[in-house]
Length: 253
Length: 223
Image (cartoon, rainbow over all chains, first blue to last red; front, side):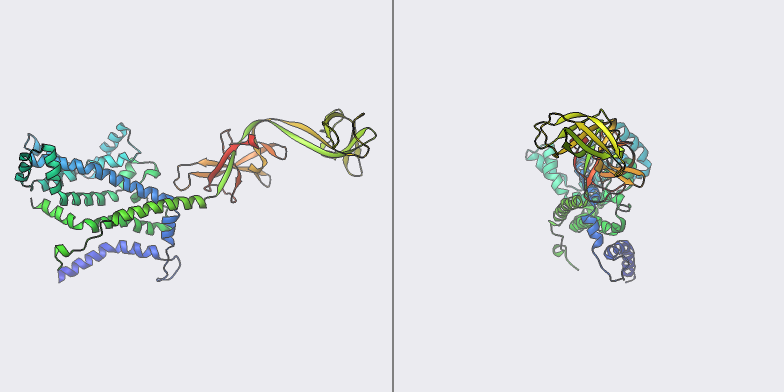
């Protein structure tokens, strides 16, 4: 009972900022506590073109990261889990090391690399470094270690080549892990702030997460924050069961 | 406790529906913002000569066209300078020199006479007299509607493209000095270059930094 109470308190504390923003987004300026208005939403959704530019920048960024990271992670996970090759453990150790490195530790090398490639101040500057993050490969490796080898061997005996076995057998078996990875990557990158601030100069390329507190929204910032939060909430509500399955099955391998 | 099979899940179409709704709102917002942004018509300054057309009304009597002009135009209508005379029954305008000029003290004006012997004009017939004066050549000539006046200060609004997402085009108030004026066009000097987009007409009163959208751009030559 005490644990439940503690958890309830902790969840209330966690939810307070969002609830305050949601309530504040309906508040009428200068009105009483029960004065409700949709003015903020009107200003943000109907009169602010920049909101949509930043929103679609966020969607493009997250979409781009997912489109690259997912296949790369699946292929890397399959290789690490199913093949025995020299240096496998060393490379995997490097992956883990890279995963544990905070962004602040790699920001300068990333900046220099992007500068050398001429990618600074473009959406690619925030998509590519995140698209090749090591976390996906780690999660997939852990999950694929649990795939029964006999299933893959059966596929090969039926005449499938290595890539078709991966595509037709391994990938469908990884559905919970894929869903978990999609949700985790989506939640992580939807709210990215440091990378755009460091690698972009053009305000028109910024994702919404960077601009939510800007002067551009004025009194509508709270409504903007609420709309910004809808997509991650929908993704979480849709895939939370897969998220739990994917993470828990990866952990017990 | 709910079993896993009975756990309710968000409908599959919720996320695509949300994205579709945002897409529709994006188009709607774009159109609405365009409608709410004042529209301006701009012109580019031209360079070249600026001319002033002076006109007066007169009448024919005793083989002469007589007309009066304001005192300040006495130099333009000095003796020997040519004027163009047009009248209803003249097939072609007559270009004639001013023969005489005298000061009308009572009405503070200049009376001019142009000899037109043999002209197909009747005594007392009204005539229109005009004269074109060159005001000189200038680098920057704008329609008078482009230039605003506040006391002794003249200014104009330039449409400037910006990096701003909210207003890709804004107007900037720019001070100018008027060098010559023919009533329709002004020769000005200031921070204007031939590629400048100077606001000629706007749907709303303008202020410095105001976001606008360009309706049409042209050249001062068109005016």
